[in-house]
Image (cartoon, rainbow, N blue to C red):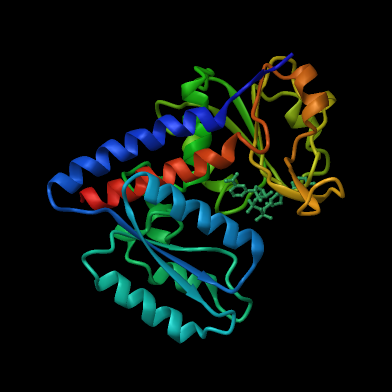
Length: 287
Ligand code: NAD
């Protein structure tokens, strides 16, 4: 039976570390502050930003909660970002994705000052990561690597297989895992991979970030592998008041039979994403 990785407990420790560092900055007269922009009323996005704002408050940091209407124009959003870029009291800027369809997300992200890009999505941050230089690392991939380190799961020489090639999870994670010091050998599978199970069965570390509930079954996992489930999918559940429950990309029950370690959903990678954001905000405020 797999050992369950308690992402919530590990994230708590990281958030405590962020709180201590925020306190040190406050003694120097700097209050770390993140501007959180949400356009529209998507319930999942709203719950994500509320979680981030709550975590900031708990870490003794400030948030500027900027709620915009679904119909906000691209020009208005660009103007807001320009104001926040110029505001010395704002250390980080987070634009909750996805943005309404009429807005070009790439243009918005690129408008953020890279020094305030705590999500690590700006092309400058992406370039730094690829080049192995210092810069903001996207929170979810950073959280995944933190979990592996914390659990003392060997990455050096390990074969890591990632399901998903998105710019916020799969690609940055692959770049992080091949860095010197982490030293994994990485395979990325995606919708163009005819049969990903050929690769996942060889994975010492399997990271699922496909956005497809229960996609990875126990028989697709190498015995003893570390399985990190990034997926967060809402599936209908009449027994729940909300009418849904969260399910990962991994079929937890069958995976537990084969894996050596596994992250649950919820309570695995999700809390780590928020914790790593807290560290990035502190880092931005320290500069
Ligand atoms: P995305 O839709 O942008 O990318 C999904 C990727 O998976 C694509 O590259 C696609 O090629 C690949 N894919 C999809 N189905 C596949 C299949 N059947 N076989 C092989 N590859 C397949 O999604 P994303 O933004 O990267 O998010 C992925 C999942 O992770 C979602 O469930 C999302 O909610 C979750 N997520 C969680 C956190 C967190 O903090 N826990 C953060 C970000 C994303």
